[in-house]
Every structure is written in C-alpha cells, then in structure tokens.
Image 1 (cartoon, each protein chain N blue to C red):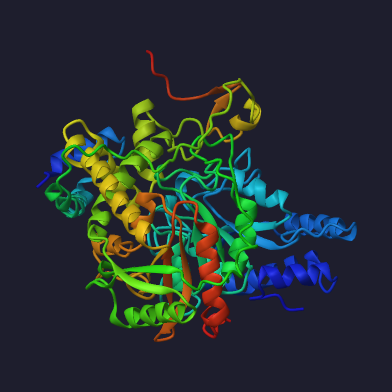
Image 2 (cartoon, one colour):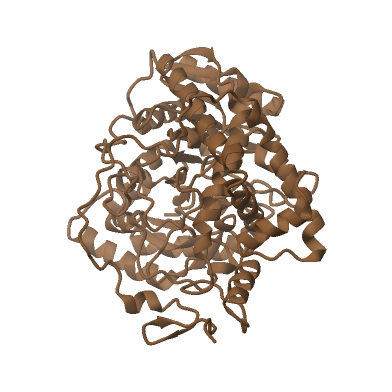
Length: 488
Length: 94
C-alpha cells in the first residue's frame, strides 16, 4: 500500500493486519525523501540502513504478537534532539560534526515505543527563527509553494510531514516553533505544558520556555505519539510528575458545553483579514459542535513580544556560552592563544541571527541593564501569565489564529528583524505562561494553509486534543494536501 | 541610543568579534531590537515578583547519587583536540 499522507492510526492497523511491513514503510519513506528532498531541503541527515535494520526488528516483534500502536512507524527528529551515534547539528556550523554519545529522553521514549527514526530535520539555527532561513543547511521550502517559507523553527519537521515523507516528526517550541510551521504547512502541531515532556538531551535555547511536542497530520496522531513522549524524567528537574492520561481515549468525547474564549487582541491590525475570516469560520464550526463562544481580553498580547525577546535571548546567551571550542563543537584553525580560540570559534561558528540574540541577551543581563530589562521582563511575564490564568478561569480553551499571515516569501528583505519577531505575536503568550497549545489546519487562503490555535489549561493536553479531534471529525482541512507539482 | 563602542564591549563579554565592516549594521539592528523593549517600561510592576519559570510544585528531584550516564571515553570523542583524558588548548601559562 502507498503510505504517503496516511495517518499513524491507519498505518498501525495495516501493520497489525499484515497488509504491510515496517520495512516496506521505511523503504517508501526513504524513496519519497530521496525524491522530494532535493527541492524541499527538509531532511538534513538520513540513516536509511540503520532504519531498515530497526524496521526488521519491529517486524520480528509484530510477528511474535506484539501490537503496540507506534511499533514500526517511520518518523524523523528535529535536529535539536541528541541521537546517539547520529550527527546532531542544531542546524549550526558550531555543531556540524557533533555526534552525541547519548539519546535525548524523547528519542529514547519513542525508540522504546517502537518508532523507526530515519534521520534529522532541518530547522532554524539553534531554533532561533520563524522561517527556517537561519539554518546552516540553507532554507527549507514550503511544499504548498516552494517560493515561500515553511515557518520555523521546526520548519523541516513540518515540511517532512506536510509533503508525506513521514507521518510524524518531533518539534520543539520556545515561542511558537511547533505551532507556526504547523500552521504554515497545513499540519497539526502541539506544544505541551512546560514540564510535560522531558528536555533532557534537547539542545537548550531558552530553558524556561523550551518544550518538545508532536507534529503530524491530525490530533489523533498527535495523541498517539504524546502518550509515548510525555511523563516525568529524573534527568530533567523541571519535568513534572503529574500523571499522564491516555490522550487517545478522550478524543471522541462530545464538546457540547465547552466554553471557548476568543481574545479580541488576537484580531488586531497584525492579523491578515483573510486569515481572520478563516479563523472566524473555524470557531463557528466549534460552535456548531455545541461549544459556547465568548469574547475575552488578553490586553498584554503585544507586550508579550517585548517580554519574550528580552527573556529568550538572555537565557540563550547563558546557554550558548558553553560553545567555547574547547570540549566539543567547532574550533577555529590555529588559535594563537586561549582568548583567540574563544573569540574566533564563536564568531566563526555561530550564524548572524544567533549572534544577534547572544548580543542582546548579554546586554540585558549585564549589571547596568539587568533591572531595566531582564528583571522588568520577568515581572511582566508574571502579569501576562496572570492574564491567561484569569481568562482560563472563565473559559475552557482560548481560540484564535496561530500566525498573523500565511506563509511569506523566502528571502523577504522588506521584513525587518522586529517585523519577523512579530510573526510570533499569537504564539508567545503560551510559552511565557507555560500553557499547552495546538495549531490545526483550519482553511486555505490563496492556496496556502491557515492554522487555528487552541490554548488550554495547564496539563490540559487531553482537552485540546479532544477539541481538535472533534473539529477534524467535522472538517477536512487536515486532509488537504499540497500538489507538489513544482517539486517533482 | 546605544553606541557602536558599547555594542563592541558587549560582544567582547560574549566572546564575539564584530568586524569594522559589520559594526554599523549590527549597532542599528541592536538599537532596533532595544526599541521593541521600550513598551515594557510603561508597565507598572511595583510589588510584582519576577517569574523565573512556569514550573508548578510537582518536580521531584532525584536522590543525589553519583552515577555515570555516559563514559568519559565516549564524551571525549567529540573533543576538537585532546591528549589522553584531557582537552588540549593553547598554552595559557608562559
């Protein structure tokens, strides 16, 4: 059977029925990557032989009667997750030759669940970007229109799923890096509650906001994978031990009586009017399913961008100080002394956007600026979190757009740096407050996908997935596929 | 408005070099980003405790036992320059 665009649920059933083998799934995925990747640039490392060997093992386990839902399903990891023995670059020259000696917890958990990792996905360098253009491997292209960006930073993961290379890829989300590319590529992406999924072995950007999550075609598939990804990890002290529910079990619950809050600030001048129309229609669909909708207010929506762009670069400047050319990572040629080694290794190893953020972060953390910027931003972060908590006392979920626009053009020089930062205006709040949020396909504008964002209560992933699944049971936006005519 | 000389000083703290060719552009971008932060100053944060992270109270710490997660030999494989069990760097003491 051809597997491109099939759901995990369908493939799992086919494996169980013996209609297809894991080896055949992996062979087809590899062939599709070989055919599409030269144009799309979504995959930066492909380990086909190892994947085929693992697929044979999965087939052997199935033959012995094992039928766990993810066993033998092909997938890809964002190149931010450490994979033992497999190069992990974070799309940076700094880590161009880094081969981790251990697996990230997420990698280990999905391996334990029987998933077959084929390799690594393109991304913005050190996850810093909203267009996947800051990658050392070059830009990744949107399969709906290859002259446009896929979003970022998990752009390669979104493209790999959206173009039918694999049914699932991991992503990470610090300010919208799962939800925005999911929206721009027409797939479903979930950022869990901060602490729901382990960060161990996930290369750090901004540690108080980084969170890993699933990217797939549907909420149902995201639920199946989140079951395996979530849970306490003794190796990550910020990882929560709240029990993990079975996310798949509650997908079919009716949503009659669900209270949805729509923040008026999400429909501001930042939002493209055609995207707004699509989001309105999607929210009406939830209303038809029995939800009640009311307008709410998150007055600090714009302020969240300023807050985030103080805190995230500050944390990044501290996290990235470890790349000094001494223990691992890039080292400059023939350093004259230790200072020269530090300066040239870092200056040559990091790309422009990463250096820009390190500079800003170093400045806001310096003694003279700390109170004015970093301390102030942390205080405003608390106020923003209180705003979200207060709204979520009145409603069950918050609904709105995931991104202000559809996919924008590659190399768009008309966009200033701060214009680019404003692309994250609707996603950043959930990261500052640590809340779970999902983006799901909700329409097409001029042939380009639009993402509906739902933000939930802390550890309310089951409810978000339930609402998203109910929406997807009533609509077919998540089944629309790019024609890929320009790619073949 | 932050001056180019200050941006260079900050870069030095971060062990980064900005070339003469790039300094004007980098300074302009730096100031553009700082302007984005101006909005924060108008917020009344009197008496608001800073929020360091969004953790709840359910993060149990493991017992502080010494364990070896990854063998030293494995970790050393990524060293750009090494001798036996040591990372090699240029001489720091004359």
